[in-house]
Length: 344
Image (tube, rainbow, N blue to C red):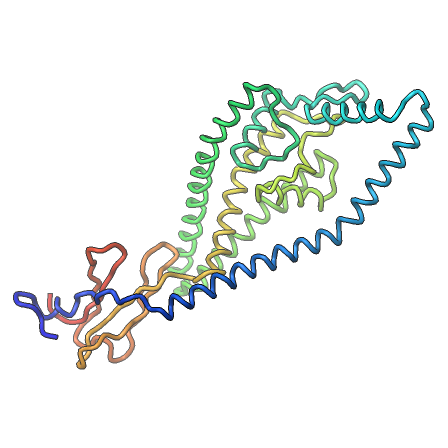
């Protein structure tokens, strides 16, 4: 195809290829891929359903039967109590526990709505952890909680995204430094990523359970379970810090845990993002075309670096014999065209 009037030959070769019509075969291939993904998702949910049902159902039945036995034994030993009265007492105890007012010995309140407890509740709200052990009871507080969450949740996502971006920049900086020193970028990226993973595991998942073991009296497995359930924002509420009325908690305890939650969620989001990038396509592809003697275009692969910049592969022998490969920006977004030649 001859170049247009007034257009240099080198620029004529650099014109982007016209967008091709949608390929029916590619469209048909995308549908089975989505169906397979949904089937895999449902299969994974079915797996979790079956495992939890097998493991937890017998324990739940045993717990319910044990509670009923203890309840009837109490009624038989204290004949002044009847069934409805005991049920009412149990409901009152449950409501008092949910409100933070429990009567054990001389302890009448766990201070959940004191200044430190309110701060921890605010953190658990904007981070969407929602343990479920504490909730506002006044109508004014409930209305304020709605507006507080509407603004706080997006703000928390922005903060987590910024912290995760800073962590990712730190990892990339270490990778570039090691790559320049070792002359091996692939090995440097692998080492920097492994270092970030191991240091995060140590700082956010392996060491904090030791603090929970000391402050809460939990086992290490229970503390590690609480740490992961919290940072992943699952927040079942079966384990919550500062809930034992027989223990004295220092003022710095919940504040430190709140900071741990913030930075730990940013790190875990970075790890989940890395896992997603491994499960999906590990890089967006770009197409580089050069002109051959037969007036056809041959694709050449480009890949995206972790920093978001395109990294060209070295041209193969016989590619662009007339000069170096040059990248020209097309007016359309995210479109790059390479051309070969010596002309300007």
